[in-house]
Image (cartoon, rainbow, N blue to C red; front, side, top):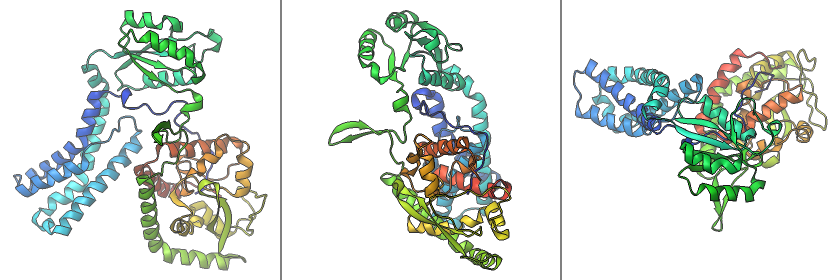
Length: 472
């Protein structure tokens, strides 16, 4: 797909998503059991309605359904549309496995078909309703656990203030941020006008003892190691829990995680999400989905090829060099949509009412059907179905000089569609700001990849193809 300008909202790279330390233990426990319990209870309601009693077969099916759905996922901090798709995709997986087991064993014939058919819609609907109720009740449930944990942040800098803003905006943390400690003058403090300064760093230990502070977040530059060591020594005389909030040079992590090299502990700062089992899962899903899609659309692709050939002189397939995995050059296939086939050192992006675009090509570009041959690239291993969109080599060489972390997007295979494309960046990127927005979304995808996110992007792409007319 192509990208266009749009208002964007990307998770700030200054601070990674808050881990489980920033979640209420009660809510985490509820969310772990909520989805599997609702799945089973919705089944029982239908069984009692249609059959009048629970048989041994239904109880066995209930145990299997609970096991497949457990543990439930944490959805409270996701936007409503992500919650909707997440619940549907998880239910599709659970119901699909149960039905497959039923048909494989032959036991499906022993179950009331009315119960099964109604359960296919009643279970996800019940999960959505209960999740909505939990979201409304979450702040009250957090208060039931008792007084909130009192916290302070050391260092009124960008990442410290970002952490404070997240704590203030989340209603399910059970954490009350009291204020900041910092030694710098107010004009050098980030966000001093909206956050409370409690004192200097040397005053922290005494303040923590007197004011019953439970949590201390150290948001100091890593260059301040001697000062951090002195502070940690002073805090050993308190019972507060201490956590580091890494500075800007460490917090913009791409798949940051602890690891070891020859027994020596290390922390990855920039790593591909597709290492080990995740890489195998990604490749299998690409091959399966691409093969299925190509089989389904092959007659349609033949019709497009004929229309392109008859519509204007030139080849049916346009081949262009792009950067692929690890920045290696690959050849990407597209249906030709223009009268030219540029692949040199200077490439002019298509613009609105571009005379180079053919009549057939205009329709193909508007609906992204010119990208369909790239499913062959997926089978070849050059591309993935979902990933950062590949740019022409000429554009890569231009923007890598202008945008920080531009080449990091090449730590994964480029995609036919991507996180940037379903968030408004489809079409011409005629300004540096638009390209920067696209790159922010690409890096956000690398940080937060999951198979569920890939499926969500695919579903949203299909919807946008028929609704979005900004590509040309």
